[in-house]
Length: 97
Image (cartoon, rainbow, N blue to C red):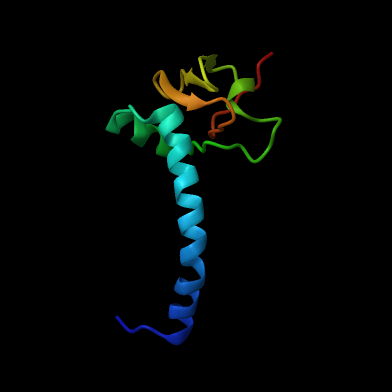
């Protein structure tokens, strides 16, 4: 593999950003999904789940499939009862009636 100066500069500039963002993602996962099985983690990926919804009007706590729990976490029927963040979001969001 051939490394260019441009590739090296991009990697060097993005490394600090990755170092800052990675712990935040791990902290959110630890809070609401540290004990998920491999199949539940795969289901999360398949459903396009993210721990922080980009739109405050569409988040897990406002979804039909969400059941509230403790500490900002709950469970989701679409994810087989797996733990999700109240502020999270997946592709199958359905607003509560």
